[in-house]
Image (cartoon, rainbow, N blue to C red; front, side, top):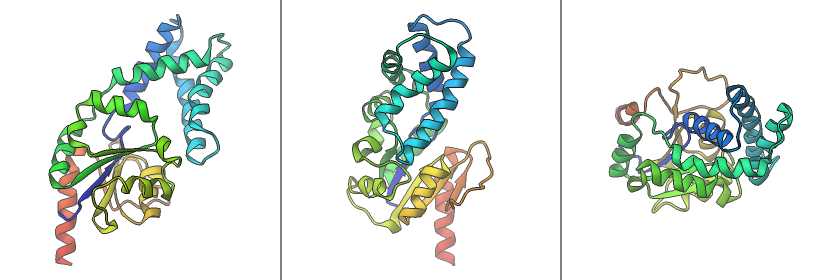
Length: 237
């Protein structure tokens, strides 16, 4: 394998954020004294949260605004009189305690770290992501963590990837690859930056976007075999 730098997304690529998000939300609502209709409230929160993250990634809102606004809007739509600032703080504090690894995460990080350098590229909150990585047991395999918060730009912005690759020990576009679950952030970002990409697509979604992954896998266990197979094909071509 000729790849030497592996840039891995964190949420829903290595860590099951959907599971962690729900556990943290339920814990937060219980801490605030809410017990009824929390599942419906969570569904409403998710819709609002996804929309705000898309607006953040296009530069329309700040991350500090997003962290509180998602709760403010959720509570307002449901007529709930609770402080969104407190909800945001409780939620973020609980996230590192609800880490769930996606199957194969440790194995792929360990294998890739023996081949080259592994870096995390994430649009998440820096302090929270660092704590979640520490709780995940993946720290030993990770060389650096690049966050949009520290960079000032978010995936898929080319400036984020320029920032991230400066953290690597060595870097060339020809020997680097981005691995992530989101076409609109990870794969599109790789396309714009001019490096290879691997789309982690466990749900078998159709690609109707303009983003073009170099590889596509349904399981983290398939990543190393897929990269090896492509390298052999390129040598034989």
